[in-house]
Length: 462
Ligand code: UD1
Ligand code: CA
Image (cartoon, rainbow, N blue to C red):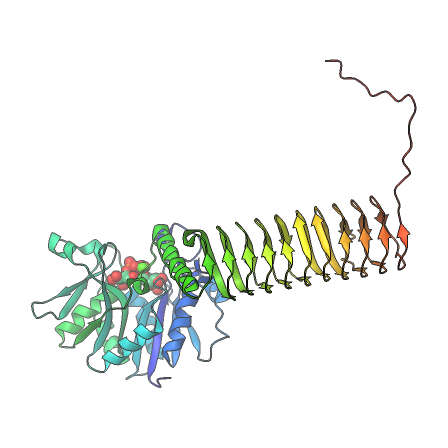
């Protein structure tokens, strides 16, 4: 659904002083995506005509980080030069919005309001002049409080720092900062704002009192879950929201059949799809987009990013895997690093302390201990002995290594790329291979073992 006369303004210009950080608050990531991007994604689904993001503090950094090309509707960036409050921020946008347009206002540091809640808020707008999202919190500290008159109508919002008596302190109904009004009404109310002397800021929330006193009607509604309206002002707000986000994701994954053995020790920083009977041990982190087949087991403390794992794969503890494809019944780990461009074919094994980059390891091939493989094409049923290193880099360029099917590489060998080892070849342990090896040949470059007569080891005098 798309509404012709409906736009959204997102405020993201503030310094975020209370975060005590050089990174703009709205760029902090939750679940692998920054807060502002989460919010834009949600607003896009509401069906607005266009979105205006007000930027200021480290604005160039924000524009660079936020991907707006993916959206079908325009996202405009509006600069707020002087950061003199949320009222001023909205005022910056209104000149480019035509009269009579409905305007949804949101705060960039309240990232998880759902599009369903926003659509409900839009639905009630037809019955009033301001439709406002409020919430009742057991601990309303930090939020503006909703002041109602005896008839129950909203008459004003009082900011937390401006609370003057215990009655006001007791109010649990808070302003979320999210509301919808008509653009020309907004222009009129904003022009009547005065700055609060203590902070030299124009509070957007003051428009509520102005509107009420001029006879405009204000209706409110609550979100289904207070998670939707949690704002981030400090590091502790941030970790609290992050935790709540993770808990929700874990609950969803558990209900879709995934076994996450300890929901408090699992982090989803992207998206995860999975088959049946998948088991995830403690402290696993999923980043980017990860797909796990049926009966996959992931051991403790593994990190998987942008990786596809087929059925019946087992990944042992402390493995770090990025941009990799693992085919069925393969085994990986413990302590393995699979870097971008790795592909493990069916039933292959990668074991302790092995690093692989941009390499295809064939079916039933094994590299089980202490090795580095880079820029290689390795055939089926190959055995790579412990301590094998592919020397793929000459200081300037990377070179390729090709290893045929059924090759046996003895332990502690170095393969100096570019090099091709033909199928069924055997490399003796401790060999430095510098020339191509023909198929079925056995080579060795180690010196023969010999005895040195009468050789005495020097003794430690102590
Ligand atoms: C604001 C509300 C408060 C509400 C709370 C909900 C005001 C005065 N108060 O308080 O009633 O309960 O949000 O989370 O609005 N920003 C700008 N330009 C500025 C100042 C801020 O764009 O000059 C942006 C910030 O980047 C932020 C948002 O506006 O994304 C809110 O600002 P913030 O300072 O966090 O307001 P709160 O104190 O949380
Ligand atoms: Ca805030």
